[in-house]
Length: 342
Image 1: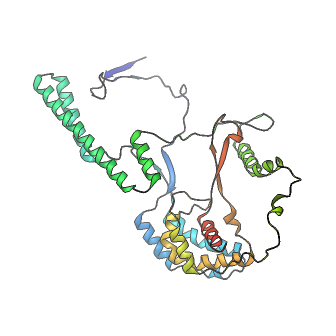
Image 2 (image 1 turned 30 degrees about the horizontal axis):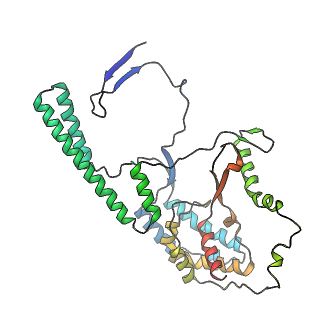
């Protein structure tokens, strides 16, 4: 078996890196790890967003406004909306090239290459002049790197003033603290202490556990107690009234909502909805008013993406996870209008 060995001339450490290349195939010997660099997402650019806004602005919502059932009306609205949404923001696969050191500029990269050239020149010809040139250049570059890094994070902290979350994100990034992206284990133990490996069975078991947390807790309380009736006397049938909303009010509710990168089961970004809020507030107000009048929420708005988040202890036990739900944006706007009338 032939080998190719060598030494890399690099000053990343006190010793030169040593490498070896062999013809032996190690593919079957090494464990397969999933690729996490490839991402599938909707690419939203300024140009595509402007084109989408122009198209939505001229959209005819007659199919939505002609329905008298909130589910049918929302289904017609979402069909017209998502058809354009998917056209202008299609799903694309891309390779993440995001660097953790965002403060490194193109100028610093070019200066680092020059430093490498001086270093190789010094190693191949270790004269006093080459050594002096290399060390002077290296020290000046290191000083410049410290200044650029300090200025970058100082600006980030100034921009995050009065924002605790952004401040701590910057501090953790500066200290090299990364969020642990723990993957779910390949198997779990069910209630019978049996190992479950099938992904669908695991999902169903998680669902059963999450939906029964409330009933299981209720069983632990004394059923003979008076309950909430003891503290709520009388009947108040008219204690709440939902007034009809308007397209102006819906527009304001959308603008007040914080923009988030997470999407619900409908794959709609709240950032895009904010841009087209003036053009979709009329059909949305109609759908919301139908919901208030009938007391029925559109079926598609009742579906959430539930992600189990690990808490502590053993990773293959369902009870050691808590659910995080991501709801459709349109349901959040409806919820906000309901809270207003409470």
